[in-house]
Length: 263
Image (cartoon, rainbow, N blue to C red):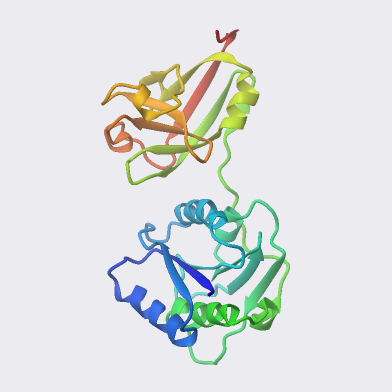
C-alpha cells in the first residue's frame, strides 16, 4: 500500500489536517497516511527542512511526502513534484527543497492544476490530488511539465579556520536540546585530536569534553555530545538547555582548538 507523509505548519487539531487527510483518502482509499509533524513553526522553512531531511530516509523507497509549510494561497509560487533519492516530494517552490536535498533531484515537475478554479488551499486543491495520482501508480511526469530549476535556499554552514570552528544552532528539539550545524566529521577533521574548548553564549559557558551519553554528566549540568545525526548538541542532563541557557535558532557556538594534543 502506498505511504503518504504529511508535514505542515498547521496544528494537529486544526481542521486543515482533517480536510487534507479526507481529500487524500477519498482519492486513494488504500493510502497509508503518516503524520511526520504538524507542529512546524508558522512559515519556518528551515525547521521543516531539518525535520524532513532527517526523517524521509527512514521511510521505504517510493514514499510520497507532502510538505504544507509556507504554502500560501494568492502568491505566485509554483507547486512542484520532485523525485529524489527514491522518494517523491510535493510542495511549494518556496526554497525549502534546496534545504532538503544534498544532491540535485532526478526529476522536477511543475504541477499543472487539474482544474482552472482559483487555488485557495494548495495542500487540498493541488497537493492531495498529485499525491493520490502518484500513489495510484501514475508517473511523476504525468503531473505537469518538467523544469530544470527551482528556488534554492542555501543551508547555513559552519565556518572553519585553523584554530577553530564557528557554528550555529539550527534546531531545538522537544527536550530543548540545541542542535548545531557542526558535524562530528568536521570536528575531527579540523580538531586533529587537539585539546578544545566549546564556548556557549559567547564565553559564558565553557566545555572541554564531549560526552558519549547524557548520563555521563550530573543531573542539571550542561554537556555537549554528538547526537544520532552526528551533529554537535548542547544539552543539560534532565534539563531544558535552550530555555535555561537562552539559546535560540541562530545562536553561535564556537570551538577553539589549542596547540596541544588530547591524551
